[in-house]
Amino acid sequence: MMRYTIRMKNCAFFARHGLFDEEERLGQRFYVDAELEVDPGAGLEVDSMQSTVDYGAAFAEIERIVTGKRRFLIEALAFDVARALCEKFPRIARAVITVRKPHAPVPGVLDHVEVTVSWPQPHAG
Image 1 (cartoon, rainbow, N blue to C red):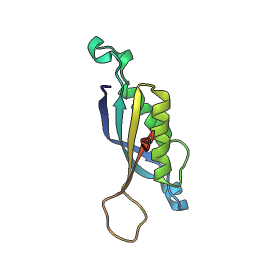
Image 2: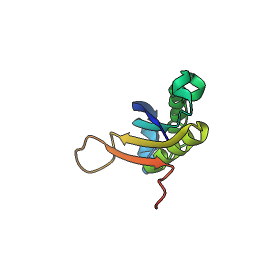
Image 3: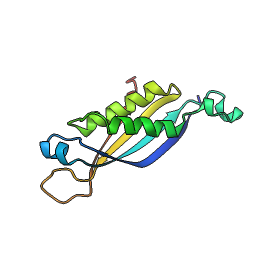
Image 4: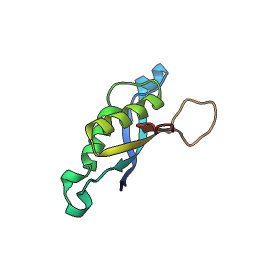
């Protein structure tokens, strides 16, 4: 079966995720990459918006989740985004979501912490 991939890179949102009260109080910018494997059906031949995933609507869904309720773990945030995208857009066969947190509270210097979650999980065979 033929699939194609839509990639949305470095989507930026201000939110209040994290374990510590200061993270909730101050908030920070989070960055999200979405890699969406799409089952086009006959969509590529007919060149129709109904046969693909509207990436503007996908961005809005990511924004809704990231700027919504607080999560303690960015792993949970990435999981919620991946699952919601697959549920809202039936043509998405698999979503791979990466969440980056540039100002992670760690005792050292680093560029950012990031996690990647895939949904649905591949079946073990």
